[in-house]
Image (cartoon, rainbow, N blue to C red; front, side):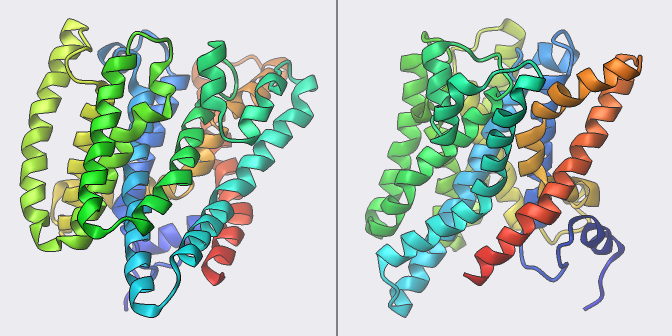
Length: 367
């Protein structure tokens, strides 16, 4: 099979074989999500994008990650469940296999990061010790909720806690629940996520509660459920989700202009629109003449998506560590600072992926 120039570019940057079977446009979705988060955290508060989104550009990026995670995790679990049922693998072994793969993918650079921060904090003027126990147990979202201390160096790690808490429960439900109850379970998850946002909306940092993220995770799971059990209905699902997306995007524009965010929760709006995008990708991923697919086939976006876990993990930390050092020896304007920070972030995230994450990914596949 001939290898395209784009595939060679991705191969050179990421060390990934172009023959690997995966939906490469999903990496571009990851890239878009992580760029939104970075713009939110690094951009000026009075920027046009920030004003239009009511300071919610970063949370919108996180919600995209939630939907994509809900889809991918549920898709993996359903595929493994089907293989286990036909091959005699026990459900308990299937779940243990899932957790082992998640641990190898997520834990190494996460724990390396938080223990590294704990070691160097005396030299850089920040203190993560009060939150460290929560960080180490993936419960830091509740530390921020209970203390209200959301302005610190590791505040972005709340979303990783939500995903890990979701992983504690979801695999057991997918593996042990009968097929005929699975759709109802996913629908209940979505309803619970939406209703909890209305019920808790008066509380500070309410959107950090795991329960309020269930609509995003559940909508991703819904797409995986349709694709796995009812693939012939995917075009019908795509049409309905497109119509609903148009409606909720219209509501989003109205809420932005009126600054009234009580009609439909922003997380729900973003989740529906993201499911629409993922469904479109699944249906048209090989339509190379489609403008959106051509954009999502960008090797730069795909590369950023491949290293997006490291980018997300490090993006708040790199400026906190390097900017004081740069400022000490160089007098730069904000543009130069951003260029240096972006370059450092990409290089460090690629090195992290290439020499830490990728060996564990390879081990995960062997196991």
